[in-house]
Length: 396
Image (cartoon, rainbow, N blue to C red):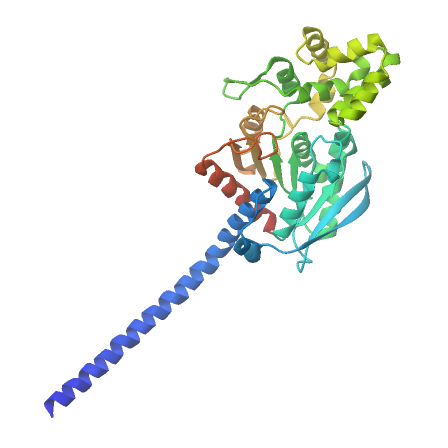
């Protein structure tokens, strides 16, 4: 009979051990669940960042990622008025998320404005991650003029969208629009409507960038000089903007048409515009197109000095001391339109508490992902940077 009692005791002890083990497993499962839940937003932001970057780079997003973090999007045209005039825009709306946070995405210097395919694809992919995205058209920037009028359109667009979404909105600016977004966010009028600024390939000093187009050099805050052959595009934009100072009044319209079609990358229209030039006008146009020519450089240098005040007005430089809006800065290491030294300048001038993240990445060129051959560490840093932006965009 003794053995039976022993077996019973072992059975009870065994049952107790099993209960404790089951309890431990259950606690471990619950803990794992809690950790997963806590970590899920972090994972989701990184998956969203990966999805956006893949879409922008023209790659497929893995189906499991699409199903986990993306929703269908519809877009609608909008027209609204601001202190700087009427604005045409497009809103991208994520399905099933009527109260999604707002993000304004500003196009760069491009004649297609809000209809530029890469911009549309980017706005749509950001919206598919659960943001309401507004792309307002900036008439000056669309016509290759970086002017102070665009600052008002940017600030006014942020104010309109903040009112529509019921809270401040993130504002992302590409290229010169990024610099102008920082100028707008530094103005007391608009500050309350900006949740953060995300500037990609932005300028700090327009005068320094204009000088870079002439010299191929841009000094960094630490005194070192970034040397990079400038993209002809930059000097051509300056010439187009100040053509009235560079050619005789009677030649301006004809030569301007050639420059415009060249910037718009419309080869047949450019050829047609060239055919309408006199021999003297053609020689002058050719000289302007050759941005390396000493005469052109000299004329532009004189011009830059003449427009110092206007250039200062469209530069974040000197305006960010009292900035309270959080700022994210991203630049391409080999950017030859706005050198990455400019992003380093912005970072050096921002109050420390407002600079949330800065990344100069070899993954980017100017504002595209086409040309570079980065390593996995560089790709991860870019994904992580974007995930931080997604987190900032989502927070109320």
